[in-house]
Figure 1 (cartoon, helix red, strand yellow):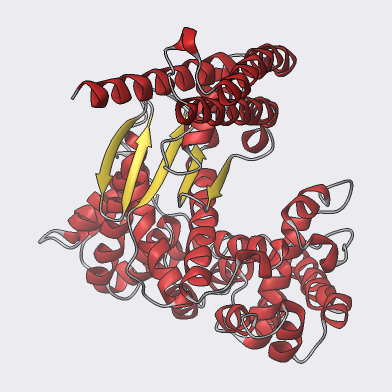
Figure 2: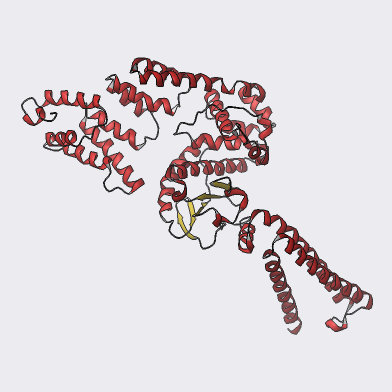
Length: 506
């Protein structure tokens, strides 16, 4: 029992000593850390000498080590601590480039294994599919993430197939400096950490809701791409950095217009590694935009299934051989023609905008439909067509052009409600209430124009619809004069004997 206690005490001493040395080293700046490390090295070298002496003499009397075996143990423990101290010195130098102070360095090390975040004092809340860590005052972010997550997951399930996933950690930061990590938040507002499967984002209070949402989609796509590769035994390093980023940017901007034409194109092979990709963002080069356009062009030519097919093909071939196998083009030929479609669309867009300015809506319609043939998912064109149709009095075409879109935004729901007033007030109230509910969900509601509009549309669907129409015109809740005029004509026919209708427009 006495011998066991002695072993426990010795082990306890060494663990405490190791902890003290860790704190001592991590608390130092790089140069001071080297000096402290050298001081400890001298001490340990002396202990090594004592160990050698003990091995030769068969004991170390003043340390109560009475056998050669004990002296050998002392020698090897001294060697281990010498390696430990020098390892900490090197580690401190590396961490000093990434983090300031012992706390930040410790968090940086901890995040190599667990998604604890790079800021202290974080609260934790688990929701379906997510574990959210957030600072005080950021609890409202959870509701936003819960509203984004289902659609992000659905989109990724369609791309990569459904998968049983562990809850994903989302870490929210209320200030860049609070991270303590120099590398990521100086140039980015968020990042995905694949080693511990966590997404790190600046707060929506810092970014704004739209930027926060699009950034979440970008980083979540990184997560699902990483999981897809892992599940299929494909190394992340086998896939070029530009393709990783291109997939995430493609998903991020799937519901917005981002089809700018880059001023310059860089060789894709020069953006294979993460470090090279980041260095490519200089002058007129925009590697994110180029990568986005490359993945979008791939999808337009081959379909969205080309993304997982290409990743899977990279298991048997090099990525660029797989790319040629899937597309029928080598990367150089693909790169040379990458902007052909974009430039043509850009020219047509200018023609369409000019036609709108001069009121030639028939020509604008023709131009936008031509763009839709080149890019069926063009969000800018899809957003412009309803306006073009309404200006020409083509209200049914406007309805159909909106309804064929995927996830409708609040303005689209509201416009559908306006349009359905001309043909089906019961349908109008459905879309008005959807827009109202979305506003309340995203902004908390209160006194929003969409809420006022929905209340009026409910009145129109009551036993006294004319009162509702009176409020609609009096409060000027219709956005388009064309819809306003057509609705007035309809009301005169529907309620020919109601004097209130004739007085709606004075």
